Length: 169
Image (cartoon, rainbow, N blue to C red; front, side, top):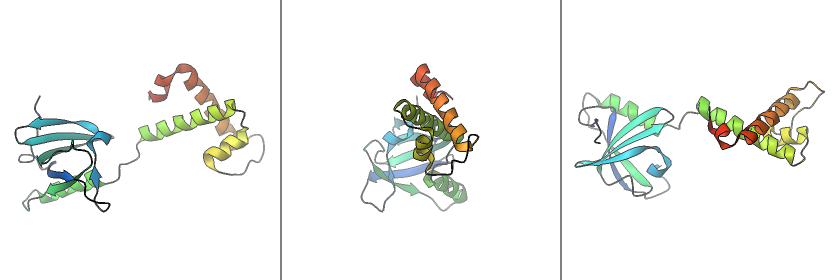
């Protein structure tokens, strides 16, 4: 199946040249670390990268993104679509946003840590200090204690339910 995009027709498709990574000052791109796919065509590679729902399309006109870490050089002709292309480049090189899904996974991981720590004999205070750093612990209704109890219960439920429960949203 061939892609239906081209940098020649759509300014949101970025034409790039890929060369082997050459130094620490360069921003490396590793396709193996990205969610997406590569389709080889007669004019080069067509790459789709999914970064948390933000889709980026690349036309690799020289080199390959499949050769490990590569340095990407963006082809940006100074034409009427330059601003559109620059906006896509800025979005592509920006640090990925922390999405709700990432926060949910992080919360599940903390719940698993809390449940495992409790099973190993840690106190509620020790678990809270390990997860959140040292903090006040003033009385029975304190927020940290309640939070840790809920996390332990959630972690125990996920452990009983198996790996799928950790990944399902």
